[in-house]
Length: 185
Image (tube, rainbow, N blue to C red; front, side, top):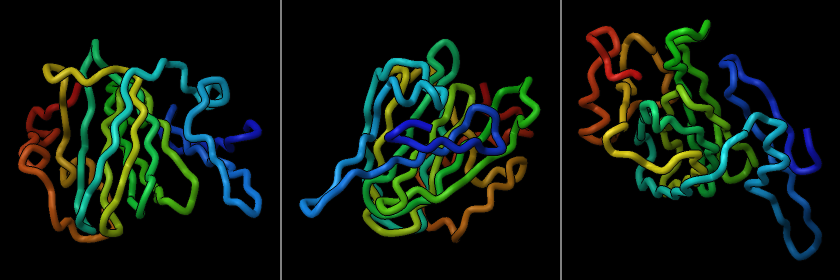
């Protein structure tokens, strides 16, 4: 824990829940979304190579589960700026005791929480409100040739999405199932 962040472990080794602390007065508030020195205590040991922002219009939409293969593996620090999501990380490290297990938690514009996801994990989310904006800090730039994904509805993962999936991209829907040879690293 630092002055700006409270860090909690999750059931997946290396995945951390980061609660930001707001500093405010009658004018409003300030919260630090990223500080390399403070986040090093949580396990963020990488430089920030890319920052992405997404907008998802419709409640119930699933985006993911995406990852980058070696040598372009990436860590992510994921934050919800507007709305709320059920954010999920899946352990795809074959030598891990939590291989193929997932962890999900609510990220919202009101709970000041981010998820730190190290390399070797797939990531995705389901929108629980309309007009959701997400912000991602990536430790490596996107490399199209290293892109991978697992199906959000893969029975081998049994992710308990909180609501019916109403929208998903064709790309996400067409990732192979893990037990059929999969698309894992």
